Image 1 (cartoon, rainbow, N blue to C red):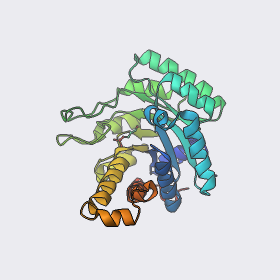
Image 2 (spheres, rainbow, N blue to C red):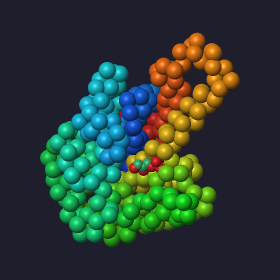
Image 3 (tube, rainbow, N blue to C red):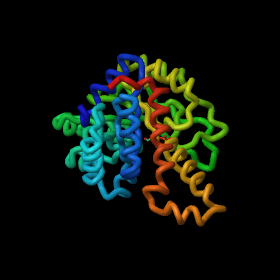
Image 4 (cartoon, rainbow, N blue to C red):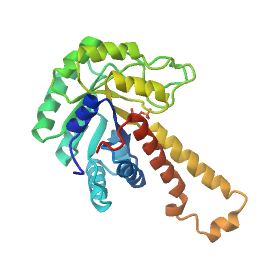
Length: 293
Ligand code: 13P
């Protein structure tokens, strides 16, 4: 099975009341951790790169080849989609060119007509190559100075029009935001999600900003139609917490640190990477996609 486009397994999640994870990768070890978690849990996954993360790693071609090669060398058997997260139009074209198997065109900053028109073009190009397409209406913001208590709500009419472009799954704001949720966050707008899902019956909805949403709200959102959930910050925090704890452990014992050669990045990063795998496995369980490969 291994590398596939995502429309079939995301639709299967929607039809059967669970969600698959769209896990952002940042480097090689991160990719290994996500793949290990998916294989251990027998879950289909999307491994996604933001534009910035792909650039950081050396470009789309490198990112795509790295994921593809790891899937092969690790003997991964579960379905894995290589997905572009929040891509600008030109970046989407590049990912289609280099062979990602799924792309998100994010035209949410554009006037709606232009967003729809570009989404139609992306659908035509991506589907011709058998790739799946995600697009976004409204905007999904991030926390700034802790003052955002309420994420944006996507206009229902825009969501309906976007689904008609032929995309495979739809990102729409339901009070969610990227990054850590501020103390004063009001929670997911499940009533808005319900209206959205009624307007696009049976269509898979994507929940961005999946880190830090209480599990009961995640489960409620899945029941209402969310079939893909994006997670990045949660893995980053797990990595950073474990790495900091590892380092702190040797603060008072530099001699042992040197003796064990823990400065070797393969040792220094091991706890952090294990924590990423743990965080991804934990989310897969909550999303209900374990044993759905
Ligand atoms: P978090 O970083 O909040 O998990 O959001 C990830 C995301 O939505 C990527 O598109």
